[in-house]
Amino acid sequence: DTGVSQDPRHKITKRGQNVTFRCDPISEHNRLYWYRQTLGQGPEFLTYFQNEAQLEKSRLLSDRFSAERPKGSFSTLEIQRTEQGDSAMYLCASGGASSYNEQFFGPGTRLTVL
Amino acid sequence: DQQVKQNSPSLSVQEGRISILNCDYTNSMFDYFLWYKKYPAEGPTFLISISSIKDKNEDGRFTVFLNKSAKHLSLHIVPSQPGDSAVYFCAAGYNFNKFYFGSGTKLNVKP
Image (cartoon, rainbow over all chains, first blue to last red):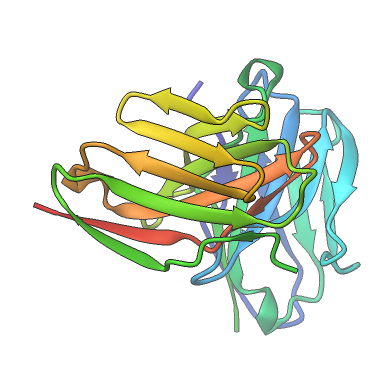
């Protein structure tokens, strides 16, 4: 297993368009997190899945954002009607029972909204 | 509502010396703390963690200290190497559900 992967690595879109990102966690990991990171800041929590159940969602996540993890494996994060303020790095992380509280991050998807 | 703070945006250290990175938190419910290292254009890489039942955890050149009464943790790197130059984030959380990250400290280790 090569770790957490994310696709695409970069996305440029026009304001108002919808975008979808994919995250493939480490295969045996049942926990999956989405974060957003802007320049000069640390990762900001967006949402958390344990298997297919979405157990935690940040109040900062507007209703334009939705995340799914349909079979408890890969996850998608969709942003509808993108705004310029959505421009950021979107990071996915996963963790498993054997890694306790540790989270292993993917390389991120850089979103630019024009 | 920034629950984890790293008040030093940057730190410069000579190779071979000790690097000390600091982190403060406000939520007494946090029971697990992590340090990550991040290079440009990559996701954060896990370094070391500590549970709230401990006050010290050591892994090679990296040691994390936790002072619960002061709500403060620190990462010590001894000896520092040029390859350690990166941005370091501390994170805190509880019950696995979410983690709060500091804004990072950029460490520069000079040869």
